Image (tube, rainbow, N blue to C red):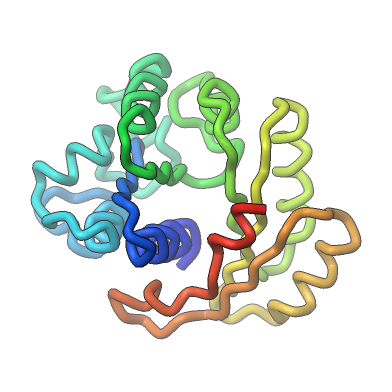
Amino acid sequence: MGKTFVTCGLAWQLRKTGKAVRAVKPVISGFDPADWSGTDTAALLRATGREETLAEAKAISPWRYKKMVSPHLAAEHEAAEPSDILSFCKDAISGDEVTLIEGAGGVMTPLTWGYNQVELLEELSIPAVLVVGTYVGTISHTLTALEAMKARGLKVASIVISESVGSLTSLHETCESLNNYVSLPIVQVPRAPEKADAWKNLPPLLEALND
């Protein structure tokens, strides 16, 4: 549970307000076309009310890699061009729907050799939601990600703390620690039951994102 859980929850909450929503994950690792019902792409299709077909999966995740490793390694001979990823994302946000773009891995994750996620965000120039965990090292990872985003002039709308499995640090403790360093809205998301529609009970995010 993490970025996909939060993206699905946001999509669900937006749909409940009557908005048309599209959620895309341009690059995904660990996608086996023979068995992909448990993938992030499938979850995004369910949350936005779309059919779970390979055609729909290809439409929201054009670059699907079977290996569960960083995209630039998983791509092998299928590597995407940065300009193609950027064009896909620009097309996705150009319509009338509210579009949510879920990244792959962390802010500095390479999407291709020499092109990472923060560069894509910079070129898109859209607000970002930073999803973090409660595992050991979260504070350092979060502050490092924020510094990288700040250096690119990115707008971070909110931080969402998604409780990590087996964490020894509580949501409250993680939130209190981060509040010493940042003034951004922070939303705490407790660990959810392992069920397909658990994101329907995600705490309200829209108010924080609209501030």
